[in-house]
Image (cartoon, rainbow, N blue to C red; front, side, top):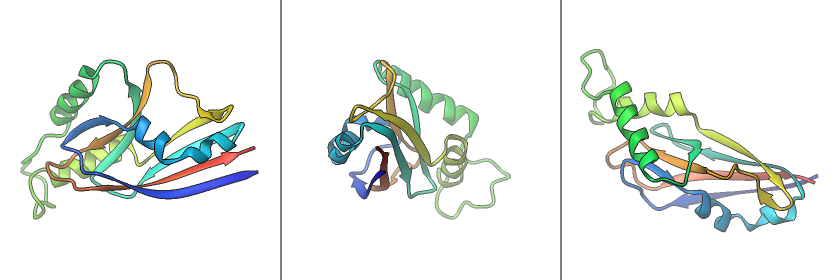
Length: 140
């Protein structure tokens, strides 16, 4: 069994859904040492999330942002956690809906995503700052 793990820090992204597949692969060449296994990405934040989805047409990421803003609008009268800004509580909710981890198979030393798939960083804050990710790859 082979196991690699490292923590990386991404530069800040504006609010929205951003393809980070290439950044992850570039930051973690150790994946190439694994013939069959899994690649896991964990985000160490509660107001940003990760997901896997369509990565060929950037308008999909625009539509994701629009729909999540519709599903979880800001400035709701029932929000109690409001002292960090009107985007903070909605960011926590969006993060919980999407999740903090994605996992992709590794096959022949490469991540095995579908033809149109990519890994997204979902930045839910207006000013989220840099984000820390833990990358793990394991297998044989």
